[in-house]
Image 1 (tube, one colour):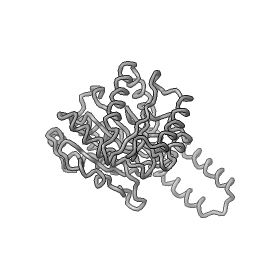
Image 2 (cartoon, helix red, strand yellow):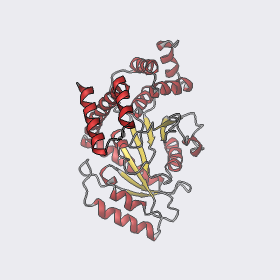
Image 3 (cartoon, one colour):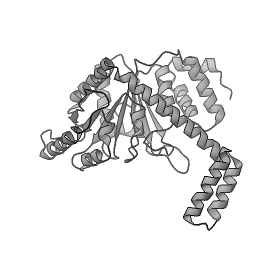
Image 4 (cartoon, one colour):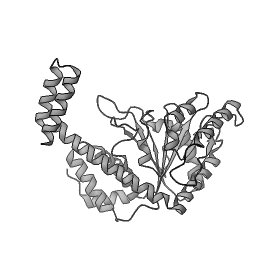
Length: 328
């Protein structure tokens, strides 16, 4: 690569968006020289100071629940109420199985903020990762913080049952649901109450709708049996309509109250410590798995096993033997 690290850092600190986008691409790249360059740039930017003044807000929920639409409206309110702040938004999209890139590109669903000079919106592929987030998302978030974005929002791909790993990345997690689809009950069943900090009901144009009140009652009943990881926090249920900008002030207030609760109780640092441990484990697992698949003997053995007529139990035994040989 022909780029000078010092010159590249200068471009980033001057707000060069093209350089920022390229650096994120290098962070997400499979090429070793790309990733090494990106890490060298980040080390040059880093002051080794903890990012305690950074707030990371996550939006998750089933596909079609209106995550991008809510973010578009909520971001407008945030920018109006915080005229000196910048906002970075990462939208983690499903990956194409052919080329690995993003399919959806959520910028098109955020028309009111995508071109705002105070907002940086970046669609990134999930790369097939479970949990609705990219395995490089934490590194991209750190890069954005190092170049001056202290408010970071993440929209997960919304993959359903495995939609929990976003909780290992954010300070505040919003779970979005719809009363009309009965999605709230599905959220309760799949343990969302164990990870959500605030539950947001979307597309509620009628704030006094009877069905919504009933679903919210069921949510409250379910949450009464669950204690939030931050003692003393009762998960709020917030009704919103992004198209009509209803309930966004209440949502903003709930987020602010949670931030204060986390800070005063020392819960924010405890959460981040837990998250760091989870990411360390994830990095180690990914590195080991990559070494396994890149080993020439493994590729040859897998091909032989797949072409064989072994029974299912015999195939399992062969794979376990292969793993042991790799470890040895």
